[in-house]
Image (cartoon, rainbow, N blue to C red; front, top):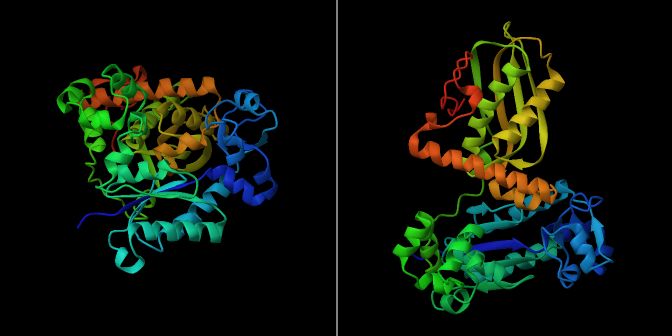
Length: 408
């Protein structure tokens, strides 16, 4: 039996939620922006009126104001967005228990086994749209298809508050004219390669020689070629499968006690590297960091701190861990055991919508992410001990290169 997959994408989510709390915002061009007092702040979301001025997500606030001087800037309220995200998920689960979040405002639903109760995929999509609109005052665009990739293309096809069905009969008509960059997992670097091959549309990608794509892009080339041709058998996860994972942490009793900031930094960096590696492996980011310290008398303390934006980077995890230790521990006191834990986990793509860093910070984060993912690739190919931080080499703390990537 062929699957019926829905992809639901809440329209202008952050901005729409803000309008629920302040209805007058519906009548003016408005945008939810991070660091609005800073000219480098970015647009996180905008309403339909602002969209007509050409304002786009992730552009700088000063650029948005240049397009629309009357733009009303609203600071983000993430507690509100989380609340409504959960309320929307509860509505999805009235129709199926196979609900896979993709960020805070998007989800895939597998309704294959629900159609005998609720009707066709399109009928279920229309029912979901009506319920969300009536009960929550929000709108959602829904794509209906036979796989996850095309369902997402469907939700992007027509906005706001629309249902688009992409079937085996019509997918070439709808999908093939789309820009190749619209296809999930085709990033900027892939677009550059594809552009050199004169591949501009998904249709051109689908018809291109798969072996050449493999030579140019490796397994990624083969995968996106399959996606363009409607080949995607990846399952929709059960609604609460990701929520079972609450944290990712690693702890170590050192060969000798840690004393002083240099020792502590060495231990923290090694453990943070392990935590970050596992987060990336599982496609997760942490929204907070917890540090547990045990002294030679086996007395322990545990402290935690929320991160400004979700992360899976060892540098950001270690930096916040050091902040916690400096604020809560006498650096002259000995540490027998140290545990670093990433807490409040979320899908790794969530930070694309929650990022409040300015443009310079974003460039630095992207650079750091490339470095750490390159390290992942080297370790995957040549082993965990193939590359490490200089502080881990020939240390007398019992930290072996590559040994800290084990779970607690």
